[in-house]
Amino acid sequence: MFYREAGQFKTNYKADSAIFPIFQDRMGLTLIVAVAFIIPLFGSDFLINSFMIPFLIFSLAAIGLNILTGYCGQLSLGTGAFMGVGAYSCYKLATIFPDVNILIHILLSGFFAAGVGCVFGLPSLRIKGLYLAITTLAAQFFLEWAFIRIPWLYNYNDSGAIEVPQRTLFSVPITGASATPMARYYVILALVIGLTWIASNIIRGRIGRSWMMIRDMDIAAELMGIKPLNAKLSAFAMSSYFCGVAGALMVFMWLGAAEVESFDINQSFDILFMVIIGGMGSLIGCFLGAAFIFGLPIFVRAMPDMMGFAMNSATADHVSRMVIGGLIIFFLIVEPHGFARLWQITKEKLRTWPFPYA
Amino acid sequence: MNAHDSTLHAPGDGIANGAELLRVDNVTLRFGGVTAIEDISFDILKGEIRAIIGPNGAGKTSMLNVINGFYHPQEGTIRFRGDTRTKMKPYEAAASGIARTFQNVALFTGMSTLDNIMSGRSLKMNKNFITQMFYYGPARDEEIAHRRRVEEIIDFLEIAHIRRQPVGKLPYGLQKRVELGRALALEPDLLLLDEPMAGMNLEEKEDMSRFIVDVNQQFGTTIALIEHDMGVVMDLADRVVVLDYGKKIADGEPAEVQANQNVIDAYLGVPH
Image 1 (tube, rainbow over the protein chains, first blue to last red):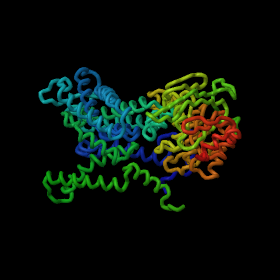
Image 2 (tube, one colour):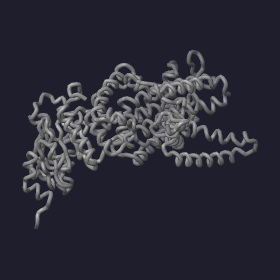
Image 3 (cartoon, rainbow over the protein chains, first blue to last red):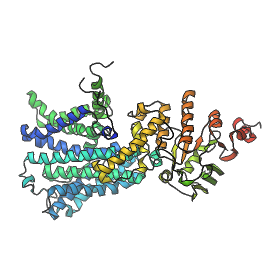
């Protein structure tokens, strides 16, 4: 009744090619962004620091992986390592050039990840599918090794960890121990919104189409004049850039310090689950998937307390794992194409509601 | 759509109608011990509809694959628009003006009809990454200019109603039509159609035939066509080349070929 494009006529192709051609969609998005901006004013620091910040960071990483896997069809298990490249290069940049603004370092660090991603993307020109996943697994293990064995990367710290120095933006601390969750949250929110917008622009243009052409039918794509080398490596580069920025944000604006364990294979799997559960080839799916995979354990662990019976933390942890595993299977059976598809179906149903046969 | 309004036409590079557009010279293609194509020569003239026919396994599709660079023949050369070439990549063939459709529809199934046909414009789009990133000015203008061309093709093929649908869900006949549209979006000089009417009913075949003739006459696109429906071939084609077991057994006007004893033997068999 309310969600309907009736009467919204497009009189030129410019209006027709808008990201959200339907007025109700634009309103909805405005509402979501507005809520995202005012949440810190009402929410507790716990909500901001333990859910909203990591949710946004993982959404960004999921967008990165989705560009590669969902849009270009190249399966990757090296996401965690590419996030690590971003984090470690941001750390090196911040210690080598301490006077440059940290935001610039974070955005630059993505380029290092993009470069590494391109190198490990080269095998994709010859191999596909699961076999490619194995070669990206090699990237994962090699980079993890490098993060431990090359002490230069963590400035020869005895702990082997990278620790985030304090940096400010407009003299408000945004990294380090004294940065408030609210300040960090706004910086991350702005970055994630900006990068998501860029991703959606790229995807709807020529480059995004070339990725999807390679994904759907690489032979036909070549016949349309697409060079597989350019299409695949640009997907690897862009994907790794997003993952790298997400990794830098994760260490600098959320964890505060990190060791190699933060970028291990489990991290790669988590991001992959976010993409699969959220929906391959969908940007909104990245956010839904990140909220589900990251948010659900927090919620499940908090459940016993909320419902008033005591459970020791180890049991809660095990229960939450079982519940989440079950839910993942459940959702994949109900809708193999993920939340994004469910969302799409809901919207289609809404268009005809409450008169589905009209 | 009126022919005079159309901005879609084969550029042609000054090759006169009836002059040689493509020449295949003594091409031999082997896969290990199997000789798929043996010493075949023929030409395609600008502006004609050239049919390639033959029984199953005659090497017709292999021939198309050689022409657009999927296979590299062991012997022989291909001359396109006066340039002789030995090895080329499929995307180079596309850039030089050869487009093609496939026997088994090879559409981008996850994309909409509109995006599929837009993908045919990829080669003509060149705005850089930065402008695309922000989707402003040049990148958006380019997108809209190409959208306009693509809408012409959509009108021409009468598929406006499925513009936004993912092509994977379309019926087969429409998929074939979208695939033709995608090839047309390249504005090719030479259009290779690999069994455009396979698996269609009579009505769909008639529609497709009409589109092929219209493409040939309105846009001036030269067409090479593989087809098993002899009625269609004899009606549409200006000249026919017949292959059998990788060898050329006849070449000429439809009526000539029809009367050729070798062709009759190849299709009907000979008593031993």
